[in-house]
Image (cartoon, rainbow, N blue to C red; front, side, top):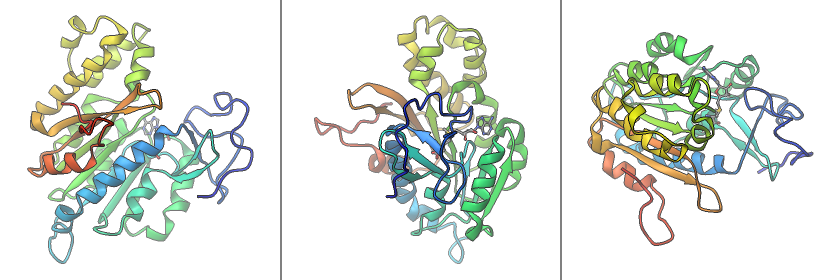
Length: 292
Ligand SMILES: C[S@@+](CC[C@H](N)C(=O)[O-])C[C@H]1O[C@@H](n2cnc3c(N)ncnc32)[C@H](O)[C@@H]1O
């Protein structure tokens, strides 16, 4: 993998803009890059495993076998390329990971981002495949109707929900996407970010918006209770037709074995357990690190 000169910088927090992009460096192609921790590698590894694990079912929805199609929807797409802040390594972002998959390629890919610089980067980085790619510039919560117009109604689809923080992730947006007959979800649940945000102004409303009700308020009384919110988000997904057994979460840990965030997976597909089994990591004790 190429490395970026000047990385790591002396103060990556000061040198990141509001959308998480490096404000000092551009990618090798001159377009924006995100500045990320090495935990992004784990997220991308799991995304790749999910895409591989679902190749078989997806192939049945692709012509000439099937006509339904298969869409990858990246609601918080980023610029398509990132730099690992401690090493300067340049890596593909989620849009390029999905686009470059070859075993059973997605028939359409929809990338949404709020940031104009990221939109230019995505347009350039995906231009070779623009017959399959649609790029939506705006707040995905507002644009969800336009995004749904680009999703094959009878396809086998997946939406990646990967915001930096919880306040931009709205339960109603998940509900709208989840109304599509076959829509899997991969959701970045910002466990640590929420712990830091706990008790601050706007926290309660953010969680109400996310889980769709106020029931959580009697149980989540301390920052350490935050992981229990996953249960409430799961209930929200179950209420729109996802089977409780097919909504799973996987803690993504740092080198000190502390959970930084969770990835949640939801499917209506009966192969869910097989898929989860192949994406869950094997822990040091040989156990699968997949929570319920
Ligand atoms: C964590 S990054 C995405 C990383 C990307 N999924 C990857 O793995 O390469 C989050 C992105 O969400 C974008 N964003 C923030 N709020 C948004 C919103 N309301 N709608 C759409 N995009 C948004 C930011 O500009 C940023 O690029």
